[in-house]
Length: 92
Image (cartoon, rainbow, N blue to C red; front, top):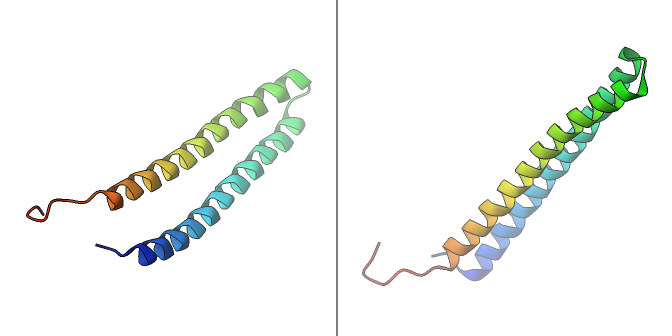
């Protein structure tokens, strides 16, 4: 069983790594939506076509980024719960 101080240290290290990945995911999503916006401006003539394209892509990217963060939080919560559960002394 990991002692509390070790668990806190490893949790902080992993959290910093997760924050870095999360920041990269958000930046990549914004860059992709911006690229689609620039492409749509040059491809379509009407504002409604540009809006439709960017909104559709933005919805998909937002869903993917939201799923990423939801999975991260769920995995962290499960790990924290698993580390707090104690098993009886005779069980493995």
